[in-house]
Image: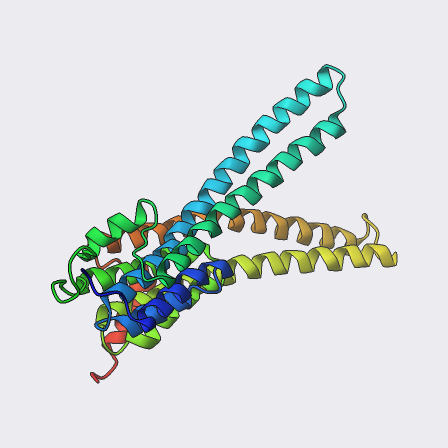
Length: 306
């Protein structure tokens, strides 16, 4: 019979899984758990890496599924409201019903998302093996983890695949707005001196995600600022639509809104690039972001060897 996981193994596994309940803010904990348990406990290391994958890759799938579901729902809702209006129905009541259904659907999705980490934490608290659907089995194969063997018979997890999984999850975490940067930052801090591969991938991921976040937040902030200033000037009565300042304000407002729309449309494409980077790393490529990858590589090449 296999020896049960130690108390320390179980504690780290429970913490790693439950950190998913923080919805992005807890993504750092599975990385720390993996770093602590690596080469100490195959069980703790695997569960931490699995939890990291669920929070990064699983969150990405959850967001994309929610977005697709929202598009389908809105399309059906508009068609139903149009049909109800043509038949003389109460469109306000229909809209309230559809919105209630949609809110219930989103709450259901959220409930499913947090259910698995809770089940995983309970299972690991009792020292049992837990595998997320689809993810767990594939990750175990990828890392070479076989829980049916005795601890002394198991080989350590495949180091190259461990590093690639951690690096790829950093790329995938780009959809976890702001908090997703904690994953590559933590990996860089813990393994920057141990693995040149993780150091490079973490730094370029952090720079890329920081750039995308600043672009998104900065654009929205500037546009809102212009709109507030323009509205304030109008309320004060100092500016009319046909005055020179009014014309300049309208042009500035229209220009800022146009730039905002263009950038907001580009942000999903930048997210796709991050997902593509994670996929390439998992496939064994040393992926480099356009321009950013080369700049980071040059910067690191100038650092003295430690």
